[in-house]
Image 1: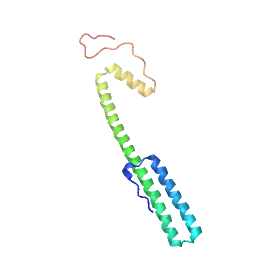
Image 2 (image 1 turned 120 degrees about the vertical axis):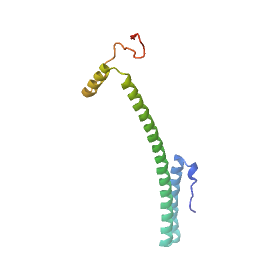
Image 3 (image 1 turned 180 degrees about the horizontal axis):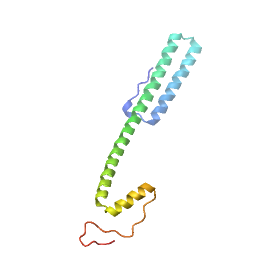
Image 4 (image 1 turned 45 degrees about the horizontal axis):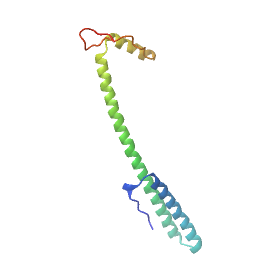
Length: 129
């Protein structure tokens, strides 16, 4: 009997069950061949059924993994867009001296030095933190 999986409800434990089922079918094939002297055509059909079963489960697993990876790519693209917007904003708020210091650090590969004080650009009085 050919096993037809319910693709929507399968999970990783089902893959193991399906593989075990395929192996069990192959073992039953060997036993039936030895005990009844089944024809080569019947053996080929059983092997083909078992291979189709394994193929369908592998294809399902691959499709499921592709969907997971597509979702991760989508999330990474969104995160990258957020970071680019944040970077653009920070560049517009940085003073020319800060930008020059940053560019020098990027070129030398040195870590940024901790700031001693900031001048807040949004305050008229030039408050220091």
